[in-house]
Amino acid sequence: MDMETVKLSRIVEKLAPELEPFLTERERQLNIVLRDGLGVLEPEDAMEIVQLSICEQQRDTSLH
Image 1 (spheres, rainbow, N blue to C red):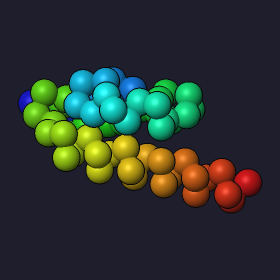
Image 2: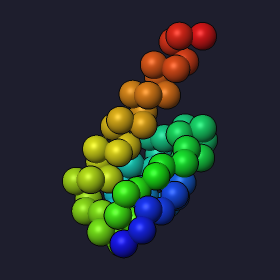
Image 3: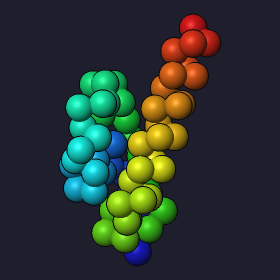
Image 4: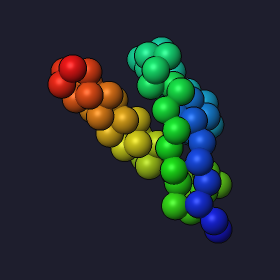
């Protein structure tokens, strides 16, 4: 499988829709590069991606 770039919202929509209300619009629009594509992601992978993305956004916000 080739790398695939998707919006975080697509990952959440497919694998963890219960997290959607907790994401900001900026987080939803983040581009995520998946080494093996969206088709092989598991729900626990989605949780980890969401957690890391939120942490990264908060870190960037606090630095400005």
